Length: 219
Image (cartoon, one colour):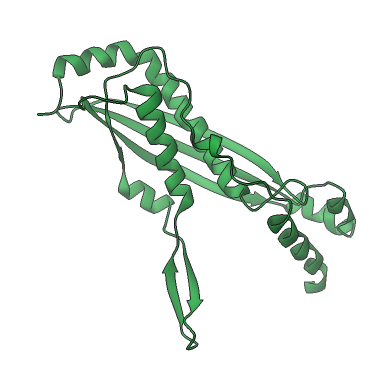
């Protein structure tokens, strides 16, 4: 059994570390502005929900004495959520400058990035992995995301809540790239979820703006 899977593991490693495209920074850019912008809102993230679904990654390293130490590493997926969501709010939903008329609290209720390879694995093994070398993908990477943005006025009263969903999938293989696939599909799902939220807020922009201007800025 181990010999059967060895060529597959070698092929996976080859696809992950060769022929791989870099991360597309365009995925972190804000979408086009909506027709009517809201007054400026302070962007916040709900620590509890994000800590649950985005635990801090870490690696175990040998310090040279045979003792392994745990070292935290940057959580790029969490940082991508913050970058995409804050840019969408600050550049596409609200005016980017001026006093704060309230806040926008981002929560996450579902976030997963998974590899699916069961069906492809059977075909790969049956072809002795030859099909993978001529273009058949090894696996599929999927990201599913659900974000919630709560809007508050300057007095801390919640005005409305918006839920956005994002889904993205990409193939992983020798000619598809793989080193940044997880991050790419996740960022694309975040972008789609925030655009979903932006579209909903755009429909309520006039009503929300009226409330913000009536309540005023923070004291």
